[in-house]
Image (cartoon, rainbow, N blue to C red; front, side, top):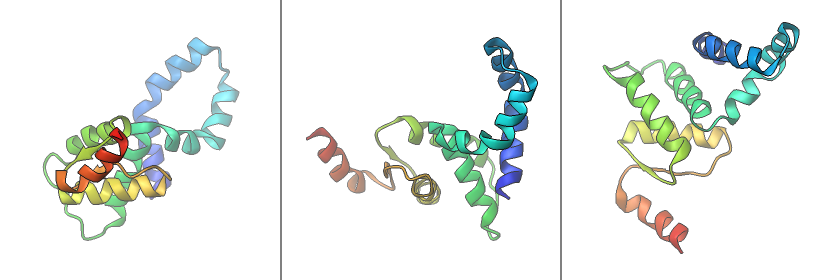
Length: 127
């Protein structure tokens, strides 16, 4: 499933990747090597996109999950927030999926279900 998700993301990014590779003078052989050997690793290191990948993967692993209207939109914006913001407060299922993704990627936990849970982390960060 992870490889399918990676291929889905690669297909979605192909135009931008091709344009940037051309601008950087990267050869087709180098691109092939990068896709085969580094794409998955480099994708995981991207702040929001790596987390988006983990959320999609998590949803696909959960056979009982029923996709709801707006799930992909929510995932897009929440992974951007969790990738770039110090703290994110969101509803329970999104918190669980984002938190799971952050753990798998070895990232600090920055996602909370409510402000009461977030306050100790915010207070610690503020000092």
